Image (cartoon, rainbow, N blue to C red; front, side):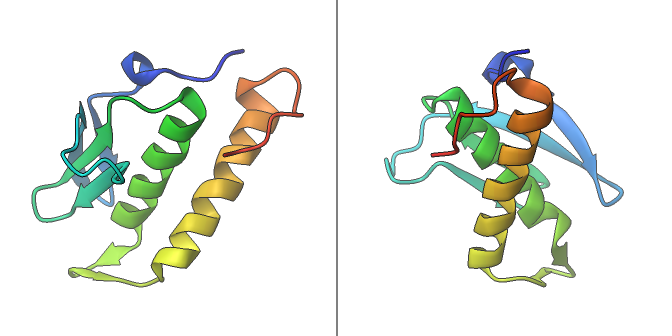
Length: 105
């Protein structure tokens, strides 16, 4: 099984009872891979990332949405980053890649 590419991702997700839209776009800030806006219920992902980096970034922004309560994050950004890396590796080792030698970036 292969890693998903941007066309494989859903256009929206239900997260915590709210519908979030997922948009792929070009960011003016080239260092930005994605962002989550809980007020707009929107997740934006850079459209020029590798499949591994896209998976990590989508997961990262989903975790931000999941772990945001009443406008406040209940975890640090470093904790979200760690969750993203480990969960992406779990998915790649068990569902997306036949050979688990691929490490996350």
